[in-house]
Amino acid sequence: MSEENVKNIVLEIIADVAPDEELDGLNPAESLRDQLDLDSMDFLDIVMELRKRHKVEVPSEDYPQLATLNSCVAYLTPKFA
Image 1 (spheres, helix red, strand yellow):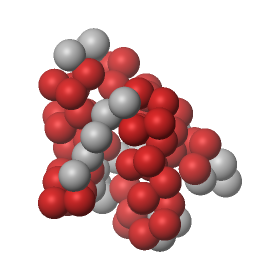
Image 2 (cartoon, one colour):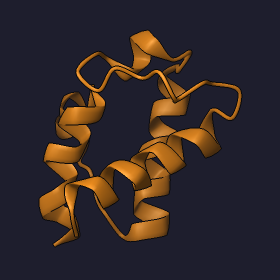
Image 3 (cartoon, rainbow, N blue to C red):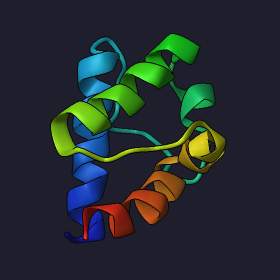
């Protein structure tokens, strides 16, 4: 799966978890939690949706690798291969 496809998957999940957030102006290099009004439960919901929808497991020790959109794509792309 391409990096663009993984990015779209992540954005789709974020849009479902936080429907009131504007994703168009998102800086892919900045912290998602800083840019969006995501709390720890929202973040866990994103991780759970990855597992539920796409069978992608993210161990808790890897959560910091999901801090930005760029780091999400870099971390998740090999898991979708």
